[in-house]
Length: 281
Ligand SMILES: NC(=O)c1ccc[n+]([C@@H]2O[C@H](COP(=O)([O-])OP(=O)(O)OC[C@H]3O[C@@H](n4cnc5c(N)ncnc54)[C@H](O)[C@@H]3O)[C@@H](O)[C@H]2O)c1
Image (cartoon, rainbow, N blue to C red; front, side, top):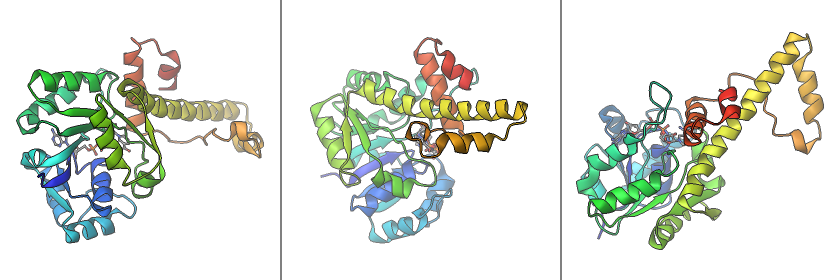
């Protein structure tokens, strides 16, 4: 019998911790594992390491119920039925994706994986990573089911969006699909099932589409400004009761590091042939 339903590697981060808290709140036994000792100690004492609306009350509640634990000790990986990996996946100093990162994390914890566990990748990954991780585990003699179930929350809104957004799930095996479906059904009934490469692209397309929309709004704003036109008069005229333009964002300092790095990952995936994305950057 596993001690935990779920262990989250990178579990004190912006994506890992809200998910851990939400799952614990729904009755799952969760262990969040992280190499950041300060963050682990903070979480153990009921302090969120970053701002997330409504999370701290639920964290305190989850700790008190015994459903949530935080540790830097990786042995919780062996003690869990499902392992979710949500470490950061930044681009390198040349703005290229770091292919080796996910493999290094899997290698770091290889000895802790057990046969018949489910490993869910939830970091945003370069397309093809799920297949590669599955192959790497089986080459190392691990019969672990591998899934990719992307996160699409907005930072700060995680505690509501984790149950209001649909969850995309994908896996390399039917057992992986079944276990992923069962896990996420405690957060939402709206589950979309696709192949791993489709889920990987779905996440990158989602973020890059948003990035291009922000870039377009900003360029329109600069154009209007150059001709002494009040951009907001134009914006209001376009979007007033006109559904086809309602997704034009307002201009501004939009798009954090995720949208930028994910547009770069998509460009690299398409061998650099992504003018629209690079122009948006
Ligand atoms: N932040 C968002 O809004 C958001 C939304 C959707 C998807 N994502 C994706 O989720 C992933 C994680 O992003 P994040 O914002 O949570 O990053 P983050 O830096 O806040 O969290 C990552 C956590 O992983 C820990 N970590 C790093 N290496 C580790 C290791 N080897 N073992 C254990 N823990 C380790 C870090 O200490 C950190 O606490 C990225 O791929 C990102 O693109 C982020």
